[in-house]
Length: 73
Image (cartoon, rainbow, N blue to C red; front, top):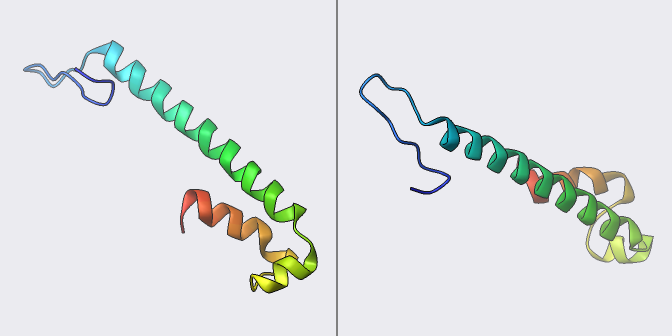
């Protein structure tokens, strides 16, 4: 059984260990996304205004672009 699967029993109760691993997995994923967002933000902020303009971006839109690149919509 993997961390993403749950063992269901007759009454619909799940194994606590599996539920805990799922929670830890979600926390880990949120942490990875947070780090990826800040790394993307730092990379975009390191670009010059000229480089951003070449990409069709403005400095004001950097946070939104970094957010969409990691979290989607």
